[in-house]
Image (cartoon, rainbow, N blue to C red; front, side, top):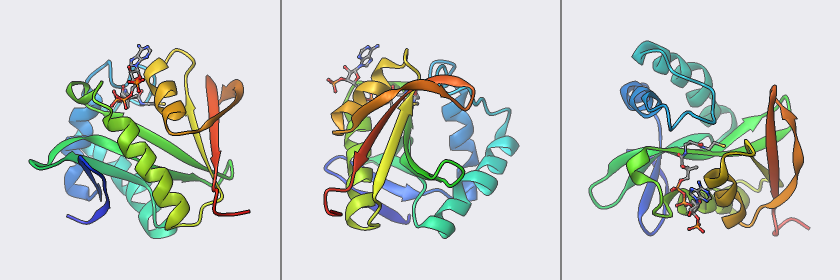
Length: 171
Ligand SMILES: CC(C)(COP(=O)(O)OP(=O)(O)OC[C@H]1O[C@@H](n2cnc3c(N)ncnc32)[C@H](O)[C@@H]1OP(=O)(O)O)[C@@H](O)C(=O)NCCC(=O)NCCS
């Protein structure tokens, strides 16, 4: 397990191709993908997402979406992480957890740790977070992490509220 970040309750590690079934099962729950609009058809599709979208980010940017496990049993609960979006000149903070892990502060804990990692280890200048206006839990997490609300608009064809946080270590 290639652990990138450890928090009080969580471990964040890089995904591998063998994680396709975990990604598939996470996205099977309609409530989990209610505001993300990116269903995964089957395990092969999940493997393609890993191959084409998730794994290349690690090599290109030293960051990406990381698998989240709860200590000490290491149960997989979803993912959180920093995705480069060069077409928008943005580093996007994202997270997605299985339903039974919701409401325990895990997303906030993981997201906050990703922001710190991005600023302290990777010297990123700015991290962006975005959620649909109805996705109140996600918006709450962005606020919990100290991000500032920038505004609302259509992004990637859908209404979204955008938040940002600047690296306090870069003047
Ligand atoms: C968004 C998500 C990651 C949040 O995970 P979580 O671990 O439950 O988040 P946290 O417990 O850290 O914080 C959630 C906060 O939102 C609040 N919240 C949850 N549902 C809410 C709702 N319907 N209305 C208002 N607030 C809500 C919680 O009370 C909590 O607030 P608090 O920090 O003041 O206690 C989880 O709901 C999820 O995986 N959703 C599906 C995927 C998704 O939408 N991802 C984001 C795409 S932009």
